[in-house]
Length: 324
Image: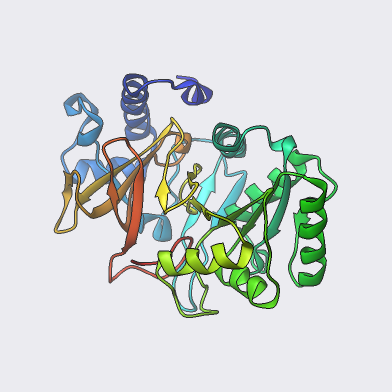
């Protein structure tokens, strides 16, 4: 199976067929995942539905090299975290899969990247090495081919002038920022934006008290003068992102799917109720595509999902740490 074929998925049946192929491949090629499956007595010959596939606990990315390839890693992404917490590491043997994943997803949800000016307000990410979010936004900035695109770390006044100038020119703009930095911005300046999408990546990074999503989004909507706040849901261990264009309801690209597991029984899936978030990310073909995260959420019948919070014992790190 060609890895790139996952980006041509057009139906749920196609997704299921590809997911079963990827499971078989990773069972054979990934020693960490194979050992986990063996402990559960799960073999590809026994798996007929994607719901039966074992989901690797995300904590394995802290202690193991989760790789389904003989090739060396081209890049290693690492998670953010509070002091003393061991970060997750994602050994990416083919970074082009990541680039295709976020570019195709952006095109699906927002259209041609060259139609946008991309403004990055991600200070906590820029200040460390190994952020997959910075890699993505940096590439989107380049792909936009817009001279106004760029990162803004300590240049708030320059950023404000840039936003106003882009608004006046009618330029479609995406401002993607970590929550605390967006709040800092609107406490010093107010806006009435018509051509700018505000996208928060979640998390206060210890800079502020965590806010429930509705409270955060209401503050941002008022401060930026917009009707909706968009969100990005991703993590170090994934190569795909889900997007929300408002109200915290996320949609996956065709090669990504979210399921929920029973909070009391990690090996049982549940529907239409709050559970632990399991993710199938087929772009992760060279690491592990079946991951049991530490997030809590709810999946709706149309496949969209909502993040409710995190398990109490989970590490505080990464994107979208808000709880309801």
